[in-house]
Image (tube, rainbow, N blue to C red; front, side):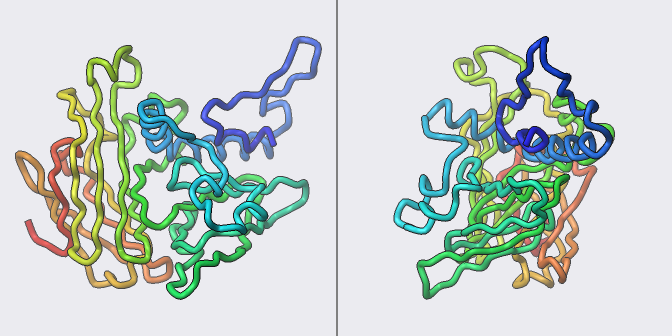
Length: 301
């Protein structure tokens, strides 16, 4: 359990001077590997955590919550979801909780759900039913299942690299906008960016607050600035990667154009037929999200 507590916003293990040491390295390489993986999973979605904690501090609500907070009319979420929890309204965490288990079985409400590990869809919305469905996923000791709910746009960074050793390193890591459409082909989400260290960030409005709205039918991602801060952007704020889950209808879409304030840039796409995902990449775009107005898919600049 100490391995898996990294998904709490504040993750630490309590001890006292009279007890045995409990640092991960005390338990050997197996535990150290699992701890590194769990922490890097959390680091990969740290921009999402930061955004949701920021918004919760402004509007109230809960960051960690049971499913019935979001699905109060689904009676089954009161019965079968004690082993899983939501982070905000976009991510669901489903860990193995018992020794020896290598699979986790749990109930999912009737939505599109995607795996953040494989980028593939694990549950499809059923249009003629309100009921959800139980699913079973592999879940070994060194990786925790995190699912993205359909209808979400989530800022993401791949922190599974040796050069990431602390949060400050993430500012030099490219970011990725993950789009997980719902059954209507829509998705939305937000991203808050500041310098991470200053006081009075909210009072002095020293932050950028971005809202994304994706619409599959008109092949567009709209980008709206809820608050814009004139600061020097970091590598993590550059438009470098966009990934769309459940993109089987877009298997022939192979490019997009990012329309920004001062310039536009092209990104080429690759479709993965096995996972049904669409990846766009341009690591040297030199365009930053705070300057973007919209993104048009299958379009030339």
